[in-house]
Image 1 (cartoon, rainbow, N blue to C red):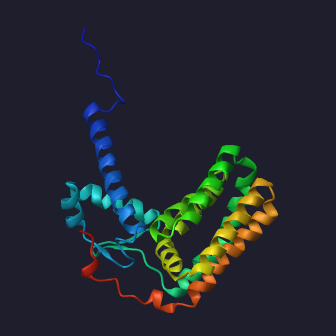
Image 2 (cartoon, one colour):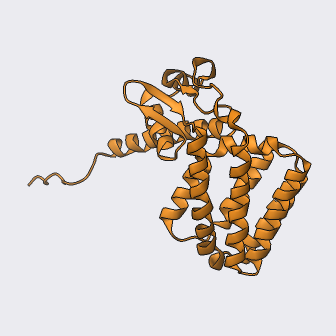
Length: 243
């Protein structure tokens, strides 16, 4: 008697192929994300899918999927039959995002503080010291991002942390501009605000932590509002295309 074929299972080759495609898409997304967050690809820069595929030795399918991943993160804009670009904001949009951050991130911090471990708090102090020792804008941005996102690591509301990550991505270019505008007094103020936030976290004082963080974000928004030229740069052209 012959055995009936098993139903409801996929051929192993199909599973392997799907896994490989996902890995390829993630590799492309990681490459483009790093280029955008580092400032190598500026807001408004067009992303040429064929060039990205050739550069990374990938087909266009994982590049398209990678662009969709990054669009969900707020880093790219993909238009059917038109192409893909690095996300950009005008001054009003950026101000609106910062106003949202002023309300959202203190909530994330308040939800996070009771759940942070002593090891995480100690790491925050280490990162803050590293920030105070650097004068390099790119290193500052990387450390500043690590510090703030670590303060939210105890937040167990996924919807909040997803929005926080997205807004950090979309404002990265403008934080870089803000950091370059800061003089010695500006850097000292940033360091002092970080210390106040961390001390409040150590006391488990969510009221003070929220208050200090709100002021920290608002000050950046107000400073950016004094520099409308940051939002009129014309990066939306082929000279800045990804390659």
